[in-house]
Image (cartoon, rainbow, N blue to C red; front, side, top):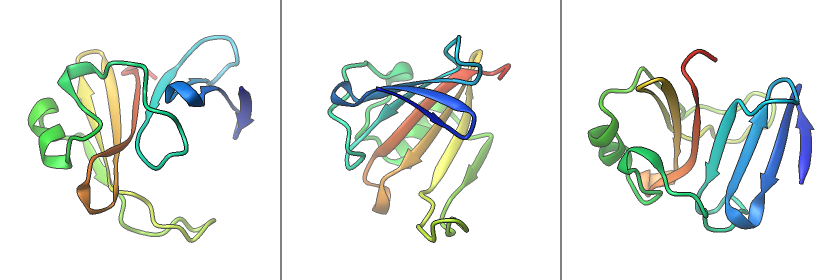
Length: 117
């Protein structure tokens, strides 16, 4: 299924647990792997850098090092929903953004894109 949200095109394979994101509608800029409670099936993709969707924040940090940025914990001003805790890592020539499940019970979303984006 393909969806356009906020100027981005999302090609989603929900039964396989991932989405491909394009800024220009022609090339893939980001790969998103969805975890538990996301409404997606179990991911058919292997995670990079030895990550597992069951990894807690501390385990992910032990595998990827110190994050470049962290966030979450406040409320989305548009929806009022809690923003999940997240980390952004530099990993080689890529950026890896992880969002964590409540109570640090694993990774809910892993997004990877080239560091130049």
